[in-house]
Length: 494
Image (cartoon, rainbow, N blue to C red):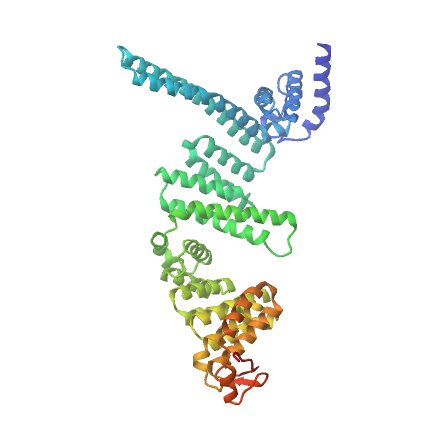
């Protein structure tokens, strides 16, 4: 007994100094942190910390409960770790009831199937008894949930950090008490209003998850669900931009990965509702009033893009309005892709060119020139393919992809430009020159380049045909037409 009292006294003295330096002095529970019985508080705190440090969280629960009810301001851990400890106890309770419920279910089925006299009355009585048992169990679960919520709220009162803790409270409320998800959504809203771009990466995901669940129960409208998406989109975009930027630390890069996962999870949850017709129905009525609102336009364009609506007239209308207000390479790229999907290659090329002019760096410009070359190839504008590919080469001299595109443009022009002495075979010579160049400077596309070399080498001029035209292997030969390039003659055949 003396040893126990001494232990409590030592705990009281050693913890007292630390505890007095923290907490909100205006909170009533922080006025007398040790409660009405400081010796008992010291004993409970010592036992709580012992179990907590040993990670025996369920065993720590009764000591935590005493401290929470009598001296919650004594130590940060009481409110910080409280929700975790209570949820451990709650899960223990749920796990203990599972086999009991399974046995009750089996007995209920047995009584229901019975045919002897009085079986119906026995079944009804057992069903009523089981219902009462479940109600008692649920009341216990609800009581644990309330302790979790109360711990979060007291943490805010004692230690601040309201925005962050409200996000935790909302998530626990939505998951532990599904009937209160609408209330949890309001708390999520407040958390994000306070935190802004400093919102934790998991909050938007938990928020949308709760919204989808409530929508499925027809307690939330589709409009409201999309307003929730509108709320989190700029927060996610800002954090992805910050934590995926070039030159950031490894630690920040990990945050970027988490934010990208959050974005992908939200898109996955919302995908069933991202229907172009529905999105247009929701957004178009506001366009006339909002077409000068950059933030609304950005959000709408991004939402329509995620719904795969880039080729739709309304997407392009919003995108052009946004580009007029805030010209940027990204906005121009979005328009280029949209008009390309619509089949309007002239407008697509026009916006790709604008995107290149506005690109923030050479890497971005290079990507755009390559896209332009591909777009020109799709529209069979082969001279433009070469023009754009050369612009890409001017930025990256080792671009095998650019040389392959030029080779493809030459090969596709064999019929229209094969008017010289060597006919189409002469055009294939200059095409293979480009593929060979691509292979020599860019190992990443060597296999693709070699396949094209093998294909088009088979169409080189025949040796006899070339000889009768006065052309021999090793001679210089110029291909006319728009190509206007010279090559060294190679022939096939004996």
